[in-house]
Length: 286
Image (cartoon, rainbow, N blue to C red):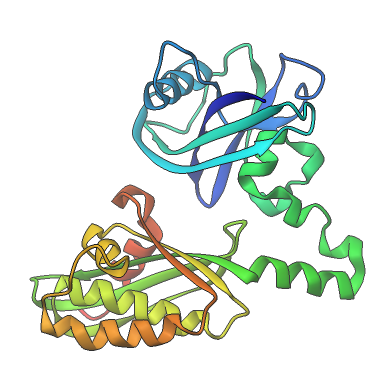
């Protein structure tokens, strides 16, 4: 079996994803939307390739590039080809007036639930899980609408953050819970009084898990900008501070209520919503 490796950029702005409409290529892709990127050239590594693709296809520079996901699947167009797609979270220096290369003739900032499977290329369909919303609730009737909501809330993405102005000092925690299409399920947080930054980060995870229990969520992917919390929750680092032990035990109790909970690290610029929630709460109690 042959293998085809491609790299793609996941670029988000105001809870929308950047998609480009293909103007060149074979019949299977012309007129369909896709993420910026393309086949990995033999002259570049994945990181260098996606940086070049963003520059070539959007005429702007990426300010941040972080590995997001890797998917492998058999192409529906050729059963003898295994596709491997490497996806990077990318932040741009500017999102205004993007100038496209001849490869694409149009771009949109789109909410994922507005897309259908036939709108996008095969790779984009696999990377963004478009098939979950292939049919809209109004097309299925009341019973179908309930099924779609159930699907969208089985898995969730949770962004968490905590902050302390003084460390220790006035502290707050914030969280944002999204479904698989990155639509808001719930956001919230709490003022904690005088604590440390690490305590605030842990309380954010606790608050998010307690909120997630109210929804039909079975699997959670946490995205935090605290490498310490991520590594400690994944068992890579021991928790030495006794002040964190009670919070950590409560989090472990809550995790047992879910089928699967995973902790991943993202850079701060990809955790802006949770960070904004923390600062909003702290400002209110200033």
